[in-house]
Length: 539
Image (cartoon, rainbow, N blue to C red; front, side, top):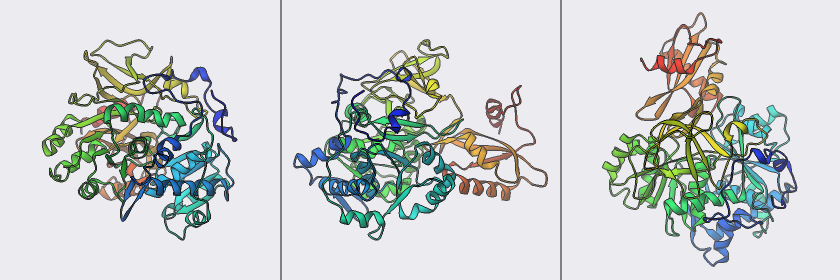
């Protein structure tokens, strides 16, 4: 480990023991990084220094920022964080906003100042925000002014002393302080293996886990997947739907375009219809979204709408062959599947350019290795299903979490996905190996939805699993045992759905609810999700 540039040693103190890390494939193949590295100097400052600051970095409704304008805003925010707020390298800053230009600037400013970003989904409720606040021991928060209520409630519940700066209008505190701050800021002298990001998983049992990523990790995903699979140029324009709080969105909409001096388009909304409108307005060349969105757009898109597109990346959930064929028939473009994880930071298996095999996720991205293993860690023959294990220049490092030993085994990251590898080296997705439900590109914890339902007075017991669905890939489905005096009708279904929406992020609500007298259990009396899925298959 290089000499750290972080004054606050919380992150380093809570890294897993070194022998619990996965093997990291660094030092060759384009993954050889200097000992001293601040990721923002590579993503942003070097373009200005090369005289290319006039190139557009971000397109957004009503305007655009070039690299020089973005750099100035990043510097002003960094000066605010280290000046009036008094933060020191290694302190944690929570970020809460949709995909906006100011969210990008805030994110980069945190990293440039040597602070650690703790991005959160803008739809999170107070109950969910408590976890990153407490686990990351957050010092400050940058929050869109319209998203304050839930954050303030979460801070009040945790009893923490977190300074919040709002942004979004000239009257907000961050913008006022920026106006007084210097437009110059020298990047913190961080080590390439200093932690710069706490990315939280959605969590299944035991709650969300914080994955700890280094400055070099953010470059590695661009130097692997983006360089070899997307091959971007400065003329490319990226667009997509994943929130920047997801590492999928951070990579596809910030790291990848800026690593190669390209542009990103951030429309105000990114639902399928909004993406189609943005295609027509901004003429992007590379799009990132989930299979659900491609399926929704396929029936409405015209060849003129997508005339500028050259690459369509599908990730976040399994890509059904029918969706791939539907999109190709409508547009003439072939969707490029891929799988990544928060622990690995981004996509590590992807469709090779020009060699897509419908139904297969693809092959390991250059720099990564993948195997199929059994529960003992032994290789499974091609053609048989087993656990996906992968290693490369990035890997899992949980923040003080015993589940490190579950994800990392014998130096390999075991992702929790069941796969089959064929004789040609293509990997074929079978299912999640845990209780995570991946619906419309969102990771949703079944136990978390169950917990929300159980706070409603009508619910005695419940089980939540995913069911195959043509539109969303997987449908969040709840099976509920009611308390006496309640009737399982359409009115109660809506009431339960609304209750979940107000308790946790709205996208997690069960879109299908069934009422039963008894839930299937194991011999020890625990809910059997396997039997529950088998029961639901009959409906």
